[in-house]
Image (cartoon, rainbow, N blue to C red):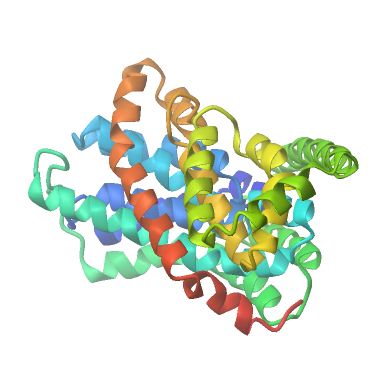
Length: 367
């Protein structure tokens, strides 16, 4: 679904629409970039792909309008991580497969936290741009309401696809696996209807799908083997019982895990972090009585922070690959500082108010 939508050009109009609507707002192009990443994530499911695609479209436009280079690159690198939360999310699917947690509930549970992350990013950009005009110089352009309304025609395909897939899971019309098939068929039909699908990009979509699916299966096989060996060693049970007998307040355990995961995310890729820690951490969280859907979303938020923190912030290096030598790596890392702070704020809100995550999964009609 994601590759068909991307290669057929169904996602390229998202940023253009957001730019038209927000160009007169303080920091409008950066806010539009965050909105574009959120919409693209709804058809993609990959943080790295979201950052790469939106980076090619949004960063040159911001640099051309003399936006601060750190903000221009940092907002796309950070907003790309939203692809890990807004369904369909590859990381949530891997988490569900490794822990035997309902993938449908995880996908639905990531929707509001993903939107919350995007809104907090946008709010921070607006406040900073309002206080420092040099950060995001005003754009001298006049856009009337007719142009705004006409620009919306490029968004209906992605919105329809998203509502079809996520709405179907939420209402219990089909399982997540069936939703993938429905989404892929819908993306194919939309691409055909728009006239943007040809043999070349259809072939590219298939080859990219086979490549990424093979990688995910390799990860799943490794995770399964690792979990089996951990079970034989009985190490997870020993650690779980040790922590439970200490009678530590559950919130202290969550606080400790926050520090550990953010630290690990600085050096390991997200899947590697999950592979190494879940067999040990998951039984502990289950033993402490935490809702496992909530924990899944919190863990993905941990991994999002790791995607943009040095020295191994993968999204930052993806953006560096997009901009080449025109913007130094240290400028990009400097630009994501404020976004890391906003991620920590979002994480604190999600931990303090679990109902933000659990509201939709509790009310969903699907399994």
